[in-house]
Length: 231
Image (tube, rainbow, N blue to C red; front, side, top):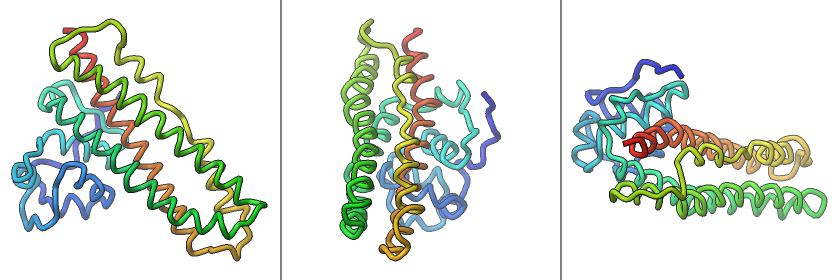
């Protein structure tokens, strides 16, 4: 485990943070941060929106730098309840916005494919989506988060430990690769090429976002909860 030097600080201009890495734009609604922040810095914008500055910066660092690991002292500066709120907001973003957006465009491609490729493409997409949903909606929302909330309320249980969470992070890369191969390699070139390129970007962006989401859980959530379990 290597902790890289941080890129952002509370004094960084908020606009510069976003233009420095466009992926950070998609974090704003999950924190309830709107646009129109002028020349304010990160600390000022977070304070205006009742967001924990340390948590916001920590998540930005992980999104921008996949090698970044927060230290124990940094973890002590955040609130676990705030982190859970962020993770739940991320789940709503995936399920209520990203998947419906992809499905709207993918439906047109599947219809244009006919029987040779359409059912296969639909199958791989459904398998990909269901695997994501099983993990974040059923396992995280119904098992992991309630357990953490129990700890935050000062209660103990031996029915679950957070190290089980590490073993339940699913690997859906193979299904994603199969779907992308159909979209990019095997469909005839004249089947909605512009829309296929656009939807491929969307799917790859979603996959990257989900990977960053997993890193946040592995590098912030799990060590934080382990520290509560060991008290």
